[in-house]
Length: 267
Image (cartoon, rainbow, N blue to C red):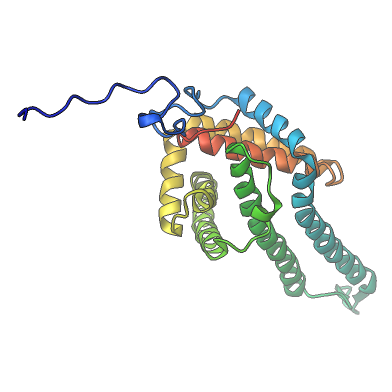
């Protein structure tokens, strides 16, 4: 019996996993789909998002409709209530020529109604965003966009908890001369995506987002600006444009997230 260990097996052919298994699925330093994947590029990101949107246009529009309906209904009700209050108010002047409005809502009541409307929209947006991002990751895996991934309660507690912590951190930063709030909101902008993609806890997701944006500052700033302009363009066109721009932005975020975390993206 030889005292030396047997020689190691020969390396597998390119694009094949060791011992004849399936092709490797990516990860740091590994090829994905049989070839090395490039780093993030704006043109490639937009091209990929548009291509995948066209392939999944029906379910992606259906996934966007709840958010659009809530925005229209809640904001419409808020505007109607405000107009009715203004029409029911009148100016009353005293003998000393001092005047004041009566019959309308108090400033505090108006602020509470507006804040309530914003809260409803924000909560719906958080849930829809997480679901659409989850389904967009499936597209990045090479699967069709699945509505079942959107309308699910999976990870809802972590998503809401993470969003609350990010909102509090941003609010505290805003109180410190406003600019810190913008910076904090940007650095923690991928927190919910880490919850959805890697099932991290809220604190761990916030730390991961901070590291990701800090290490990829140029890329994340460029994509933030471009995605904001795309989303704004959809909102300007009577909100109907959101049916196209919102899915595009979320697909772009899925592409960007995968590229920046060295994970594979289906061609």
